[in-house]
Image (tube, rainbow, N blue to C red; front, top):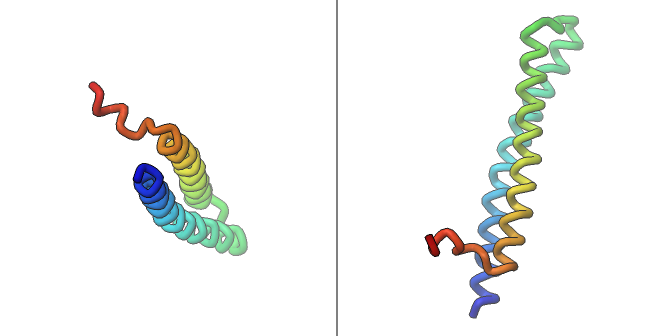
Length: 87
């Protein structure tokens, strides 16, 4: 029974992380496209640099989500998913 519950929790964690990662990947792709267009037109001013910064922050958020997913899967495997209920 526990194995079935754990697999559902793992699927839920992976699915939610995947949805957010896909959304952020689309956002970062749009930002990169906008920065590339600005560079192609020779308009690399402060606005284009801010767009690149925004894309970099999105990519960093994606890395954070992957780290959190790895930790969550480790918690589920270790049976620690309900530790907060002890307090």
